[in-house]
Length: 335
Ligand code: KG4
Ligand code: ZN
Image (cartoon, rainbow, N blue to C red; front, side, top):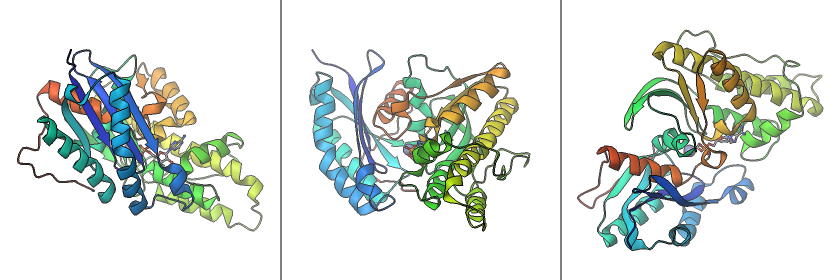
């Protein structure tokens, strides 16, 4: 019997992600992620050339594995979705080329998907998914955005960071404090051993009156604190805790403002920083106090993965708003 499956391919950065979504059962049937983090950690960050080469090495075996895990065959694939950007150009080209070639061979559509749309829709993979409309807080390594989402493909940007993304600030500050890559999880771990408030860091743009963010000053403030003559490395946990609190305070305040401004009650949090425990706690407390509800992706879908790309592709197909590459020429959009 033939199944109706959508394959999702994600290769924008340092994770090769493959997902399979069942168009009939409306659910994710299998997914696999291969993370290159260990390889890049030795260099203190992602090395683009190494990332591309590793995607090349992993992608086909991972597709085979994901399809096999669903007891399916390639003939069951009815469309191939892939991340077209933003991300590293070489890395994106690997996923795009494999997706387009596979689609060509199978005679099915290839559907380019925006990476952030994948993140944005990832909470819909949860067992209790949010309904439209909602406000989305997108907090990843490359983006910090608030959006109003009224349906698939119906996204309105409410505000974003004018400089560093929240995840980028975590990564850069982690590096500054001598932590490995990626800095976010390491900072969160260190922060758990410290106490916020012992250091005083700014809450950038908290009272700017709009929904914009700025995080680069926070990293500089941490640098300044570490340069004080009486600073010792034993205090780094307190500094990390205060940093995390400052980021959390700003994200919470602006997310609340966005709900108020749009009159919406549901807040969806997506992207790697959405894995941060403190942020989750504070968002839930603040939003429920005002009669709203917060939705998070399952932890495994917070960071980059193919499942969210398969979902976004399937939802676009079902809504009739899937953009297809028809002439065989395809492009990536790194920025
Ligand atoms: O969404 P993502 O996996 O990749 C991008 O599209 O950027 O996000 C990665 C970002 C990194 O900056 C990483 O440090 C951050 O998410 N991150 C965290 C945590 N886990 C990952 N930041 C704070 N706390 C965490 N627990
Ligand atoms: Zn991402």
